[in-house]
Image (cartoon, rainbow, N blue to C red):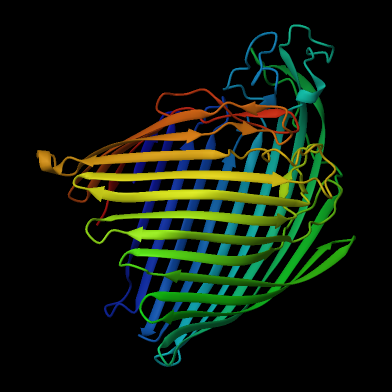
Length: 529
């Protein structure tokens, strides 16, 4: 596949697969991506290279081994076009800051890195009822961020750092962060199919573990202001880390699990499971914290009529959180409980299905942006999310239709945080309501076989800053697509934010705002065999 689009977007995707021997017991796959693209921010180009080979060996119908590797390289410049409230949500003395303004220095700004991955997955059937699966994966990641960001809280200043009553110059801070991460995952599962009377069981026993060793060096200092209405670059030298200290963090997790998925008669299914986890979070040269937890999950679905099935579920989570806060301390594991109930429906006459659900989630130690230290996170004491989700999709004659609606109510307290969170208002960055509708028409009955045209609309509700002081307006966006299939060829065109709506996506409680994505048009030509 080849892609071309606005902002000088160019991308090539490839996926090759097939047998390596006559009997088909040895198979290969190779996936590759090459991307070179601009963005809506001046100078902020993006590059990506991805190569992912894999080989599967199936010596017989009871065993298989998959070996795989992956290399990914990403390089971009600062696309985080965020500024203070003045010049974004509110007018500054010179009006709104242009959305395409690049806040950093194009000559040396950089964000990205490399990731190497290798691993294997093995499956072996002991007999017709029991199977053993083992997986291993290793990731090595190197990242570098060398950039600037707007110091909006310092106000406007001229090129000499003096107060700027004309409101043209924005203060800047330079920031350099170099990080590495070595992540090792492994898992051993034993699965069996059993029968006890009229109840069919699929039982699962397993152990798994992960080790994440991360290190980072970072530094930041004030830089020269920038005229955001008429920027001139090349006036600030490339910053270096110097003797910035190394912060190292190691997170280890080990768990054991058991699960039983039961089929009772033909209409009732029940799933029940338990996990026991240990997490060790160690700061090299600092504190070490251990946490133990038992988490459960239970789910029931019952088909009361053909195609109509109400369901209910309860699940608990216990997730380690890698990284360090601004004080060099490790994070506590994130804990959660979720209750969900709903109904699934699938038409017996036409290809159409729908789901309606309600849920309630309680979380502890949720991460949010640190309002006082850019690039760092802090943990909330508690957060509670309640919501309703409606989804439907289907095909009616030559039309394909898909719609969704979500109501999400998120509240949090400031226990263990000490920030300005208002527990009575929506947490920052999350809309209470969102909805989307897509419709695609196939023109085959009009004599244009292979031609499809479609359009969609997305609605995003007003989003607050978590303090109750301000919010950004709601926005409605339109999308469109066209495609034409001819034999092994496909020609397609996709457009997001078709009307090129200019809007503020979100303003955070710390006082900065982010611009929303402008119109994006991508055409592609693909060939399959």
